[in-house]
Amino acid sequence: MTLPFAFTAADRRLLPEGRAAGPMPWVIAIMVFLTVLAAAAGLALASSARALGDQIAGRVTIQIVEADRVARDQQAEAAARTARALPDVRDVTRVSDAEIAQLLEPWLGPGGLELPAPALVDVDLAVPAALPRLKTAVARVAPSARVDAHAQALAPLRDLVGALRWLAGLLVLLMGVATAACVVLAARAALNTHRETIDVLHLLGATDIQIARLFQRRIALDALFGGGLGFAAGALVLILLAGRIGAVGSELVGSVRLEPAGWLALVAVPMAGALLATAAARLTVERALRRSL
Amino acid sequence: MKGVEARAVASIVKFENVGLRYGMGAETLSDISFSLAPGAFYFLTGASGAGKTSLLKLLYLAQRPSRGLIRLFDEDVVTMPRERLPALRRRIGVVFQDFRLVPHLSAFDNVALPLRVAGVDEGEIAERVGEMIAWVGLAGRASARPATLSGGEQQRVAIARAVIGQPEMLVADEPTGNVDPEMATRLLHLFDALNKFGTTVVVATHDMHLVSRVPNASIMRLERGRLDDPTGALRYPPRVPA
Image (cartoon, rainbow over all chains, first blue to last red; front, side):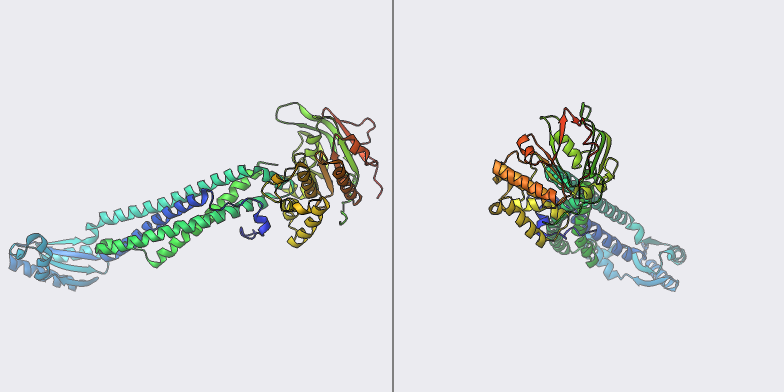
């Protein structure tokens, strides 16, 4: 197949060239802009979901809810010791009273530890499957212990991120379909506009492929122009948004970020748009030409 | 001008009981049977509405017949797949009655169209088209667009486009209708010269004066969609001596 750009200057004149004059490049620019944003959202959410999964997969907190301070400390120490002795436990950290007081200070004020706050032990499991064994062992030495897996607590958030990721993927797909539909309409309109010229070219012996290539080239150039513009606008918005996200200072919100591979995938969006537009134009024109003699 | 290497076929065109009907209407052409000898010159005459343009459309493959058999360059074009038609069309030069010039192209580019479609080198195109444009008296108007040309000038561009590819068959629909008598004579000489190089020429015209200028031409007369051929000479033409 000949490349759509392998044309002489004379070939290019066969159809009038009004690039960027019609609505086609601007429609493609808007489509690519929205596609870049949707794809960026999907990619950033995927990265966030991965980070979230890595962070919480083996995290467990043991709470000792016991009013008696001495018994609480004894049970906390026993739970920490038991956890350390188990296989598949990577790390065990007893949260100090000072840290607990600091955590509670916004709600209880200074000196909040006068109240019986639970003792906390953070456990990092090598494999999430080790959780039942930990629960059983801790229950034996610390009757007031409650073992909470972070993955369980954050499951609704993880599900929400997953759903948003799928939604972003669906939007990208719909944008692709809408772009192809726009190109089909534009190609049909161009065929009608240039019907006389096409008839003459046919009668002079031009093949369907020769004629289709003229339209294909024109639409490919429009798509590249519109795609480049849409990508530039999308990238600018993403860079501005990244600055705002960084300013929030939240670890969770901060995990929503685009990695270098994500940026590469976004660069492919206008290229894919141009290829899609070119293929759609060619198929539309060839199908329409097959109806004539 | 280079000679045309016409293929050795007994008849370049053969129609057998051809009928043409547009939509559900009455037949525009009925029971048309004739053979065109390679290298011969034909005038197609008949009153307005007799079916001359329809017959020419069948000849230059703009239309398939409703019935009958058409062989062109020894190939059955009625059942031929449409993918193979462009190669045959490139062997035919056409002067359309309404010129059908491409409005956004210059006179030069319009004349160059058949060569570009055939993939001829741009250097050769510049040389051949330049010569042809000068020959039809439009050297100073090569870059003009059709809308700025007079009817006669447009017709000359259309003729130049039809003959630039040195076709094996030239089909012309009223080619001298808009030009002055002097230009008509020049164009007729061009057709005659092409014919001498082996091109089969078919010219549809009302102008009996024009017909009389080519004494060795055969005349095909259409009357109300039927070919007037009482002696059968059109159906079984004598061989043209090589």
